[in-house]
Image (cartoon, rainbow, N blue to C red; front, side):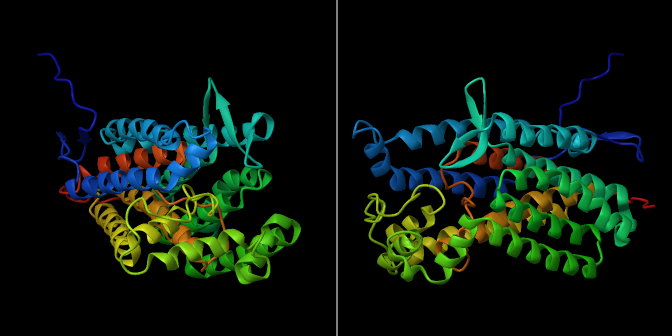
Length: 391
């Protein structure tokens, strides 16, 4: 008898000696992703059309929307494909993907292109992208693999600190050479959460946090531009025409929105007053146009997505899938929190974008692909958890 071909999302449970098929993806999580993407594209057009007209001598108002929409389409295709790949495939290819991401990060130092004064992009066959976005994903996959491999030994310094720390440094060192502080901070925070989930003793995590704080102070001391950001954050009014300008314009936009906002498309600050109004500071335009009520609704959508993502992680059938889903959801959570804190001046400017909203093709496509991985894990949410033996 010919063997029946199995779909990509089918998996083998050797303990039961039979094949178990995954269910459909988690619909609430999928709806939340699509809602954030749809609203994000609308707000991106609203925030960017004035800048687009200015950049094209008033010939076109959809320059940034068109590029973002193409990347959104690529991301949606990636999300569908990745939602059908079983988690065990990521377990198998964790190390090769990690090596590829490091090679891409190092290639930036040699052949990287400079955009807005930062050399963080590479161009391959006309396709420009940020390797750091891919590195975030591969780091999470590798940490999930290490978590499964270490098991209960993650409580020991040798595994829970040196093991995870060595893997993390492989990514952070190239980023430090690129002077990509925002990515270093973001990946460090995600790594701490994943190490905690893996079982690393809290005392080592606290010690690591202290060391990271020292590193940031030293980094800021020697990198003048970073020090200027901290000064502008603490006292933006002291230099309203230069270092404090962006922060003040962001706060003006937020305050102008009031409770119900000026109305969709009616922002004033986006008319070339607020720099990067369609990128890192798009939430300020959201507050101005949709007001406190609209801004809180968007925050609520992010909160619902994150909570549902953690729910999927908790119901995953094995340790690797749980940690992988939790890491990907944590990445979205940390990015969102940091961006909102920067826009409202609770933190210094970091250059971290708002997922699904900020302009950036690589980030959007990768974020959607990562959500596809979570959706793939959600297919097995109704299956019993495997009993795993740890060393």
